[in-house]
Length: 337
Image (tube, rainbow, N blue to C red; front, side, top):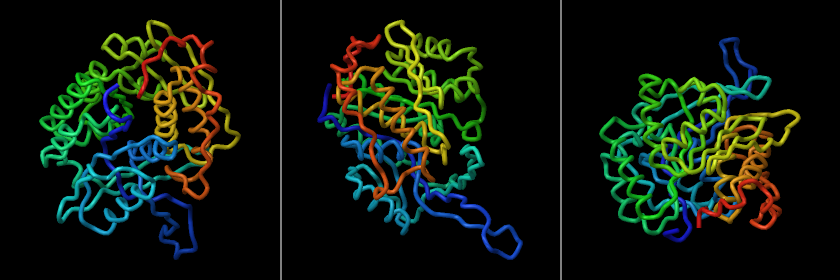
């Protein structure tokens, strides 16, 4: 695999407000909100860095105090911010998370003028293209694709194609948000294009049902594989993950969590555990176990990114190539190098 082993993650980070419930207000709907930062590919990037994977975050922020705080926080996590552009006069988007009693969340966004939305036309991807040889992988999501107009999105597709031609792994999570797309058809067209480019597809089963009306997770995996993806991982929440490689379907059970606190970054953290394990040489099946274990840790806490002081990485020492050699996919030796 080309490059030094680093992952370039492309996407958006926003100011995050987490609803802490009603406070002592004046009866006008006041409550407590906790501020942080988050975004799907950013969440995955932070957890990759905490698992020891070198990662660069490719995005565009503003020149405001929140952009300063974001950049500083990523550097403290050990992330490379050399491809994090700053746009004068701009500021990042904002979103709020409300979590119900079962840990399920809903989102509200204020992001339509965020500087990331002109990242491609402002030349940020040109800088990444010039530095592709120092990376082993690209990672992006459906939310990443939804940020751009069609002309910018086509440039992103071409960058991903160039990365594959130069030997990089391209991993893609659909992470479908209906309100970010004009229609389900527009989203499915974009996801299908990525399935023809990416070697690793990582959609949720919920996404597959919403966008494609697939009958079973296996049907969804086969469809993506027929488009061109070599490895398809269908995330199924507490049920774990379904895997499809070399024409073979199997399921890896999830890790049971007695009382989930916040499922906001369950899929993002699964992706980090999976990709980190693959980079270390684990089989697809063992990597899914790693993803399940990390997701189980993350959903036990409020917010998308656990504070570093309280974060404990799951034990993945048993998920070596040797320990996973009896899995159905023990010949899947292609991995992030």
